[in-house]
Length: 240
Image (cartoon, rainbow, N blue to C red; front, side, top):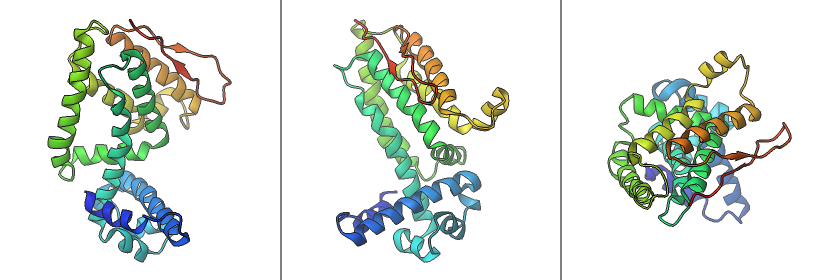
């Protein structure tokens, strides 16, 4: 998976140079377009021509930066995984459980709001056997989950949150937060919405936070009053 990204990274090292900036922008356009096309058509149905058209670039540019459709698909998955895994780095033994869980859930919900196609690409990959990410799941992700589960177990042992099965707890958070991207059509139909607005996501994030924090035996989040055209900031009291 890193092979294709290494090619793109090598082409964009010097972003201060005009040509390097153009290359970086092209790579970002390609990845964004590919994410959407792979989400809508699946890997088998997507073509480099479709992605090039969506990106507004010649098809030759795609092959220059990524070589093949397989390389581009792996680069898209790698980009998605980096997006998703960054927020969980805040799970440390000394961190406050309530504040950490609040920040994590909020970040996951924001990713579902702003990058729904990323979630769909990953879901499709898993539903089709996860062959492109099998090693990552069995090695890197397992090691990461083991480490963060140990942090949660430490919080529990110290009486800082209610007892939970740490791995199942993380799975639950992933399932709930990613649901709003993967099943957005179902949610919109049930709620009678043409689109899910920032206000919709603010309300849904607040409810998901309440469920997660209650499962952990932590105080409900405090939702600040804000104008209707922005997402309410969520402040969570520390838990002693």
